[in-house]
Structures are given as structure tokens and as C-alpha cells.
Length: 319
Image (cartoon, rainbow, N blue to C red):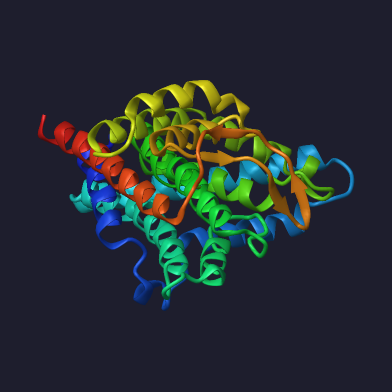
């Protein structure tokens, strides 16, 4: 009899595969990444549903349809995997596609590599690399600003791209993971506070806040555990700054991992930033100047923390 029971082996396999291989360029040069499929679905629904009036309701309809279809696809894949007799393997392989542990690390490392080119570094290369992972205007950032943006992206996307997906994967299997990725993609596409999406994207933005609520806090705690194991960082400061500064962030969730990262590395993150030539003021999380070398330290902390997660999953498998 088919049951939607998710073996812990599937989650362990998914994370291990993603850490080992990430998003193979040779594969996605030939086929479209499934996240793009979700984006295409959202764009098609938006073209049909967007109206100047009734935007909140119609936006909620778009969210409900997208999330439901993605969850149903997860049910179908889980069922097919179970029918094959290798359900946990199929689930783990498919699940790995929707994690971003390796690609996040590689994109952030590319920023450090860009800043380190040549004898005196290459600020333009660093700006170019960081522009691929942040939404702010990178063209006027100095070296500290580029480094800060990279670390903020590393911390926030650790929650959105790794810990939160794993949380929903563990809680609700592949349907939960795909539903979460749908919510996350919806927020990135229509959850903006501008004239077009302020009302239409409100349901997407609120649901994303809710879906990321547990993962953000877990990520902060995990970064503290990673700091406990990594030489040269401060676990006490990570814990203290996380609790002191998380509420200063404009996001109800991003402050937890960013403040933990800032405290562990002894730097200040967040602060003022520029979007579309407009400067947005914001308080600082943590204390201390940021340098290019801090990106390497942040990536090392990220690796230690991923190791904590992988070890916890392996222990659960063995038990």
C-alpha cells in the first residue's frame, strides 16, 4: 500500500547530491531548470489574472493555483517513485534539484575571486559577480560594500535556498518541498513593494514570510553551531548579536541568519543600500569593518554549518 512517508534517507541523499554536484552546467545547458518552469507558470497565470482592480484577491488566486499545482506534481513524483520500488532514491534525486547549497557557495566564492584578481584586486569583477546574487545596485559599491553584500546574500539565501527547503522536505516530503519552492519563486517575481505588485503580490509576500519563519530561525541557530566548530570565529558573539540585532532588519526573517553571520565574523552587515538609484536607509547588524577576506571566512562558516546539517541527517539515517 502506498504511503506518503518520507524516509530520512531521501533528505540526506538530496543534500549530499546537491553539495557534491550542485546544478550541473552541462545538464542545464540542454534542459530548462524546473525552477524556470515554475517561473513560466507564474508569468502565464499573471498574464491572465492581473487586473487594475481586485488585485489582492486575484493575486491570492495566482498563489493558490501555483502552489497547488507544484504540490500535486510532488505527489505524482512521489507516487511514481514508490511504484518503482526505489521511492527514497527517486525522491532524493528529484529533491536535490530544488536545493541550492553548492550553487550558493560557488556564487559567493566567485565574488571573493573577482575582488582578488590581479595584484590589487579587481573591484569591477567583484561588482559584476555580486550583481548576480543581490538585487541592489552594485555599480557604486566599494570593496567593503561588495563584500558585505556577498555575506548578506550568503546568510539570507542559506535560509531560503537550503535550510527552509530542507525543513519543508522533512515535514511534508516532496510535495512540501515543491510547494515551498513555488512560494519562494512567487515572492521573487511578484512579491515586490511597487505600484504593480503592492496589492497583487501581497499574498505571495505574506505567504513567503510565513513559509520562511521557521527556517530563518533554525538557520541562525545552525550558524551558531557552525561557529562553535569553526576555529577563529566567535560563537558567543554569533549568539549575542543574533538575539540583539535580528529585529532591526526590515524583513521579519532575514535578520536571524544575517545577524548570526555578522556576530560570528565580527563584522557589520545590512545598513544603507541602493535600489534603482534610491538609497534605502537601514540599521546595522553587528559591529566591525568588512573586508574581502571575510567572504572566505563566511564561506568557511557556511561549509562547517552544512557539515552540521549533513551529520545530523546521517545520524538520523543510522539510527
